[in-house]
Amino acid sequence: MQKYENRTESRCKMAFLLYPTTVKMLAGEIKSACDAYLSRKIGLEELKKLVLHYANSYPEMLFNAQELNPTVLNRIGKKRANLLNKILEGYQYKL
Image (tube, rainbow, N blue to C red; front, side, top):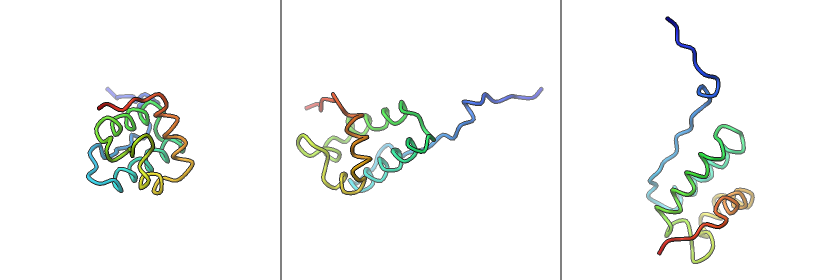
């Protein structure tokens, strides 16, 4: 008996580091995730889950007061920062 794969399941699954140890590593993972989304290798839901995981787990590395960390902004660039801000729109940082 042969197994037939579903076409949607055979899409490339990307692996991202969930627990980066530095701000630069975090920015690199966000940059890779945004690039994978823009090249349609991952979907919007996977990107949102990853970004919200970083926002909940590492707010001190991702944010600086009310804005994104300057190191993250510098590393990811303006267009990816706009995408990140759209995903984080309405997100409230927990105290």
